[in-house]
Image (cartoon, rainbow over the protein chains, first blue to last red):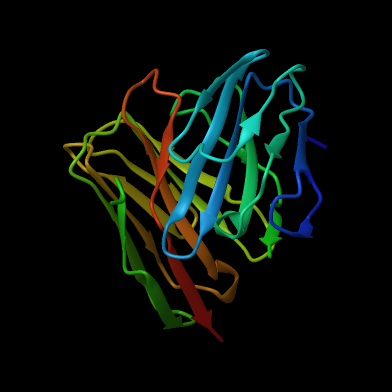
Length: 114
Length: 112
């Protein structure tokens, strides 16, 4: 089954404790992206990757890191999480990354930073 | 400030009624997508519109892209409880723009 898999689904951590949220897709998609979803703000893009070893900042990259060492994986790293990073995070992928290319989303990771 | 403004923010209707959700911007988009998101899941693509004035139908859902490609609407005829969800519009400014901007969404509740 074609899918984007994120882990974990829920994560509670404390300020400053490094964490990684994993994302994997099995559709051989070139493009992958991370979003955070907050009430009233919709989905905001954190980072995206157009291909292996090619990443770029989205609209809200501060406090986040990503890597794309393999085509299928695109982990999101929070080196020193803070409470304002409490949010619902989504990983997504698409064939080309162009605006008319459909995005396939994972089921989300709900992160709470205390 | 959101690049794409969606209205209304919340909508609650009775099963069988019609509804329309709007997505507006001052910017011109090369294409616009509509997604539906259910609780505990990621958004799922409903439709992509690319041509100004384009109308697409998906069963009881009708999507329209404005002539100037700055706005779009989603109309649901005879809503069912299964239509309940968060509806999101998303647009790209250029055909090679890899940044897709999302609206804040419209939460639709269809009551039985």
